[in-house]
Length: 631
Image (tube, rainbow, N blue to C red):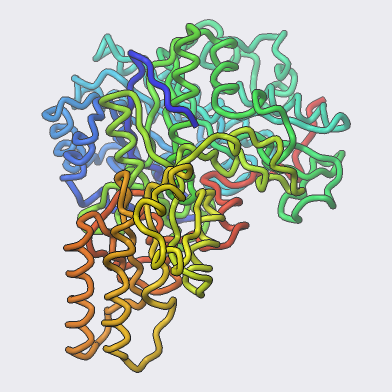
């Protein structure tokens, strides 16, 4: 994946700040990711070079119990610190929420009440000029009023359309209120923009969904009149002509359209339900069909992905744009590949005259349970620019990339030379030949896995293969017999960038400690690995079991001596004290560019199972079953 850059494209940041109500429980991502209690997170954000951030001033957290009982203390401290750091704030007032307990998305007073909150925000923080009163109103309306995932858990056309119109009306009233105080207030309106493809029989359903995806922006821009393809649908399900006319007469056109696009945002509707996994079966009351990810279907690449969707938004509205969420819930290298792909798409569009201002590294401190749309409390954590499972939060390769993009407009790493899983043949539900994978033909940097066909080597080999990392195996015999020049010649065409030593310690230890065995193993690490430590490669040493529990003094001393000898010989070594089930943790640390001795406290949520990695997604499959058909 070739790295590109362009002058003028900014790197923004964002803190996952959803406050969603599921039944009677409110989930707050700022609390669940720990950002609520870490003021120094703001300095971490500043260290990335981020100068614009999407930040919460959420209604539900400021006035949770009564509209006239507001607590600004948390926001006062943080917004003041952001101002001191010179970071411009895009204030979010409702983020996938339905408001505090005393209202909801179907409440006729919801728009007016949010406008009151917006006015108070503008009065208290007059230096803020950028606002997102309601994040992704179309998406929130669907998940709250059509699919029943979030409060008020409705599942019908009338409810979801009412929730949508109420939110858009709230945006209009909120911006009017804030502009009375801050005349320069600007609307950054976000929405998840996808597209639906289909087999010919289901073209009518795809056409409906492709018209539906524009409804929030069309309402705000005053575009819905009697010629709009969904005009009759809106009237049929309870939206009055007078309401639509009010949007036309006084539009609230976004100053910047914020495009949020995920791999699962694009869908393909297939008539052969039985040909796809059961969980994708759905229908609309007229036809049954499989609703699958479009990226897993053999569509022309130019028709899918962030560049195609951004181009559609530009062609339709011709308004300034920004990518306001770039995040992917998967393994670390896949997260990085997605961020770089989105950045490159924005670069190409900007060079072709599209007014796109920024790409946002979203969920800087990660997200919790978004793989279930927050409906399950399983603690499924997706890291972002920082990994909160360390104290203090640890900078990941996403953070390193964000810092480089913010300051230089480019970033280089060996793993971005390979395409993400969405660009490799294994993404298809039916295996396909690699002959069409053009990226596979490019010369790319490789990992070196040193060692014979041991259990540990097999574990590493399986893990790097699943994660789309190119690698080469070097046997122990080759390490022992070849001189440094011969080794360099053998590896020169593979451009090695790191070594995984899978020789010294087996994947699992028996309870009885064998000190002599450890000493013999350690002596094998020094000279052979030094032969491979060229071209800025980083020796990686895997040390088997964790030492959390009680161990004999002699065992601890021996481990310490072994680690000391390795680090003295190879200062860039990464030594991970972990068990065989945490190979993915070691690979994350490797991709993040860490060195030294590490003992992770938490294993990566995604295991070494091809299906779990390929299917990993931040926003899950839609639930279209039982929807009515537009007439």
